[in-house]
Image 1: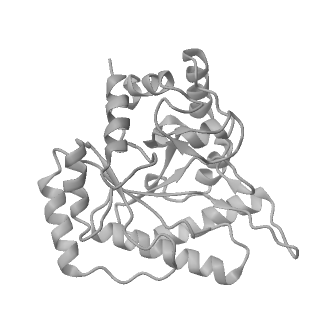
Image 2: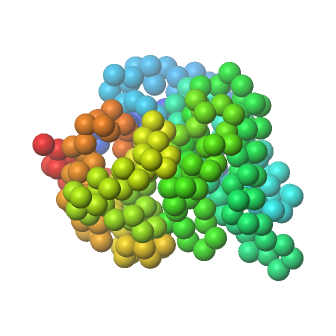
Amino acid sequence: MSVSGSKSMAFERGRELGCETIQVFIRNVRGWLSKPLDQKDIDEFLKTKEEFKREIWPIISHNSYLINLASIDKEKLEKSYTAMLDELNKATQLGIEYEIMHPGVIPISDKKEISKDEAFLQIATQLNKLMEETNGSKVKILLETTAGQGKGLGNKFHHFETIISKINDKSRIGICFDTAHSFAAGYDFTTKKKYNEMWDHFDSTIGLKYLCAFHLNDTEKELGSRVDRHTHIGQGKIGKEPFGFLLNDERFRDLPGIIETPKGKDLKEDKMNLKTLRSLIK
């Protein structure tokens, strides 16, 4: 949901669509610098959040796309850490429940390249520092499953198991399962049998207790393509039926789902996708 004009407007915009949960950006997602939140805006957001608590909950924030806790460039890593700390502090000020982030990308460098295991250790180390520095915050960091483009991490379930195993305060870590990303990463859940097998694998590798949210997106790209291209529900390579498996799975009944499908200014695409998803609920 757009926070144009005021961050609290995201609730009104969510209500227009009949949303039960919303995702917002709380700082500049394509730049390193971000101004402090104005106390008036904080108070207004918290007041509106309280008014909407029975209608729209939880509130999810997605971090800046620039943040990469696997960076081997000292300056970029420091900028990433500072930006993520700012994200968590702002999410705390606004009473936001979840902060979603991509695990990270191993940068391509002529001089040096770290292994995946070294990258996972660095990500976990940075997350532990962030959690210590925001001690007392209730914001839970959700690592998002990715398509695995290039040197991107998070396209395999064991990546998350490795990172989580190194996290000190496991009460503040979780997973956001992105349907488009995971399909592109090679996880096939297009039949009920494959769907059940995938979640059995997730549970035995990571643990379903860490699953906290979904990004519900179809994809233009083939299974295992490792390319991130979202499209409308039922109009891509996943198709409608697998979303019905998710929406009717009692285990996930109370977990929030966010659509990140293409949209225009009048939000008619969001209305269409939400209508499609709700039509699958039995």
